Length: 148
Figure 1 (spheres, one colour):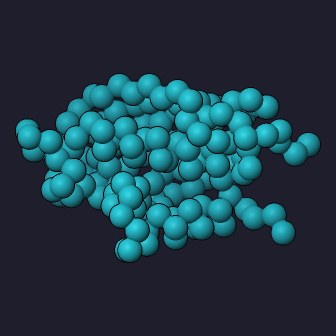
Figure 2 (cartoon, rainbow, N blue to C red):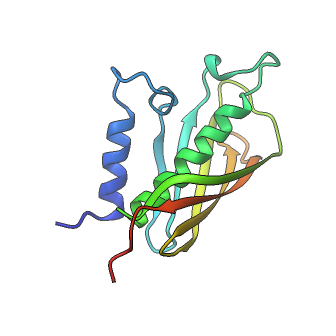
């Protein structure tokens, strides 16, 4: 039985939100904000916690990078299951700081899925203000050929 992108996403989020697993993605507690299967886009939310802040009291850039990579990689994986693999390139532009008590919402969109690479783009925003926090582009290595 072939799973739909939404079913694959539900499995991903279930695996990422196990309280006894202490990995960065699990600790960041991603949750679904929205999915658009027709547009092949996804928005995941990441609540900001004190442990994620830098010395200036802002969300650490590495946390933003991780949320972007996780969301874009998840998107590639659910719309090209068995095809999209590890991140081979990710560029990010930081635009605005973000503080605790907010939620980082990352929107990811697939630009291209080919036999060797899946390319995505992402925008991270503050859930409270809608302000853009960062933008990025990423490429994911293909694990194999897509079904025809």
